[in-house]
Amino acid sequence: MAKLRSAHQVLWWVPRGHTPSVEEAKDKVEHIVRLDPTPEALR
Image 1 (tube, one colour):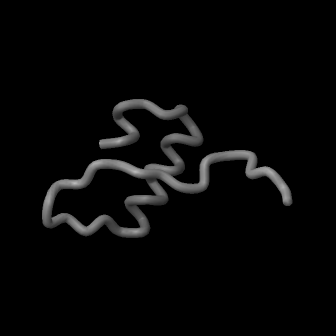
Image 2: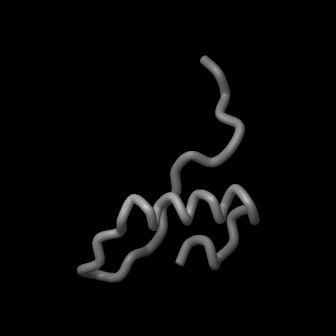
Image 3: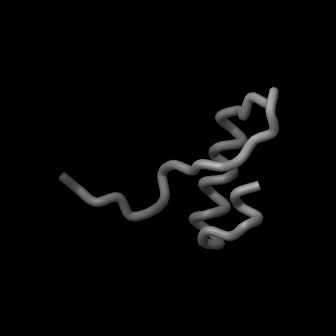
């Protein structure tokens, strides 16, 4: 089994009633890959 070289999933808090989109999740993963996990990435 090969190791993954970068983040491939992310969890973050979402407001009640909000359904996150796939695009929103992709943006979060890209942010973490570029800037490492920061509080801003998880909002």
